[in-house]
Length: 312
View 1 (spheres, rainbow, N blue to C red):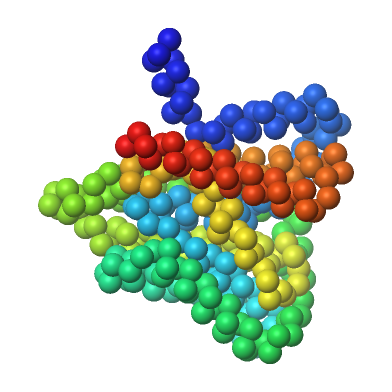
View 2: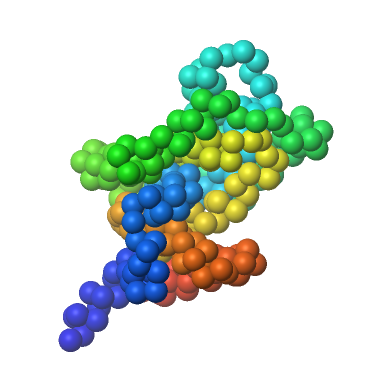
């Protein structure tokens, strides 16, 4: 019996919360349990899900990345304001991904090479980028996104929205990348014990640096998808997403200082946000209530993290 309880305690709470929310919807609002309705809500959290892929990676190497909001803000402004002139859309999107990688490279340099606190460094980067965008914009929101981006965002693969297909595909790629490639072994080793990993020949600094670069790449992808979703420029886009990403990652079973933790747990952590918003919308919960619910999920993640760190 004790072994069963211990095994149950190791199950990431994201799975439990997901089942509870899904059962609640099934019993109270069965009419919402169809691919079209669910696809709309899941599509809304796809950018968060993509951002989580980078967050879970840096957390597994004992770091964190709160600069995603800055990347989202800068990419959104750059595309909506026409800052790059008449460049073709594919080149604009490549530049957006490059911005994410450069921000990640800078974060990785500060954290891995200069030993700066990841929380302070990445939060400072977000503040700097936000100030830069506000200065360039002079407080005026930019224009609209290219119509092609919004058209692509609304496309479906069968009943499944294209952003959701992209999110699932990237999650599967990340799962294979971490489980089948040498870098995944480096990530696990660094997360478990960076000092022992260093003396075992693991390139600790390079592993942490690369984790931040990949996180920056995912932030760039998330920024493109989120910008296509809102279809307009905004000077406050995605400010809450990095905190939601941390919460979803912890709910999914990724804990600082262990090096383990899967990819699909955080995936269902994000799905919990989608189901929560479906439930609250169907019951007519106003926006303040939704904010309180988001806060409760973040608090649950913090409690789960605290309980698990006591065991390590």
